[in-house]
Image (cartoon, rainbow, N blue to C red):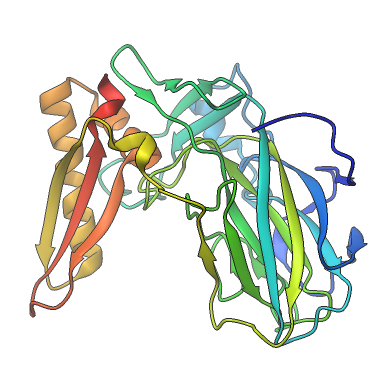
Length: 316
């Protein structure tokens, strides 16, 4: 990661929107193969500060959630093409937040009270972020929301992920990753935001370490190669920064994958509270920012297995 001045153009975070709409005026036009930096707000659009408390969760404007910077028009992009996005670099802000938001998250029925955790972390992202006296979380900056406009007219909610990308919350949208998105409108209309300093697979409480940062990308075209859904490749291992001390794992087993996922996460929250002395709310947030939901088995009918992996390095 670096925050050096770039020789290419920078798109300021003021050029943002909170819904996908192919009628939005592009911020700029780039040629295929061009590199640019986009400044991104956090998912709360700057609502939370270093003085915020859980009471501020109730005053967050839902219409300003997950702003994305853009859209960027890629010259020559046509429906049926693939937009190849190479993620070059991140410049993190050093401040972030995680929250339990009432009514949101995998275990929303079990965690009904608001909770806000504020993070101050190393802007190079090389040192783990301190959660409390027990836990520190290794960082991996990435873009939670990254995509292009849909062919269907009108405004589309920013929260659900879609076939053209969007709020996928895949933690491997990190530096070095190459992402292919299906182009559905002229110019593709690329936008990115919802940057995170760290997240586990599943983002189970509904938030990661939400943090404003700049992202540098190269935008290129592959003519006539639109994938049916986004696909990507990574430059190397994706969990090595968490693997060193092994994992504690809980499972959920049954005929419904969502119910099994809930059981696996709930079991890990209980385990962390009992074994590590964490408040259940803190355990739930930590599960969201560094633990991984995995489908372990979907062939032994009628029951499937979902596992939740929690990295023990957090406590070392």
